[in-house]
Amino acid sequence: MGLLLITLIMGGIVGWLASVLMHTDQQMGIFANIAVGVLGSFIGHFIAGLLGFAAYGLIARLIVATAGAALLIAGLRHFGVYR
Image (cartoon, rainbow, N blue to C red; front, top):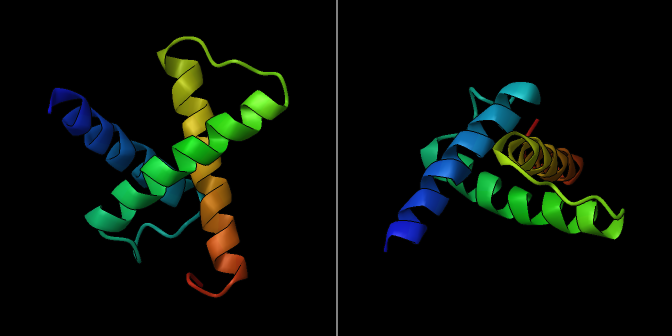
């Protein structure tokens, strides 16, 4: 239960950082931030692994997760979900 709670909190923080970075913070609510943060974290760490980059430490993981969430927001913008 504790790991799920930490995942949701960190997903919300990462999603919020990515939405501020991509200027969609006015359109996204807390649930969208959590969803984008969690899914974007998976995407970011997957792409980093493909590139041979392993994120060690909290700051590196936060940067990779935020970059993945920003990439997810950019993809959603491309398909017209966010403007």
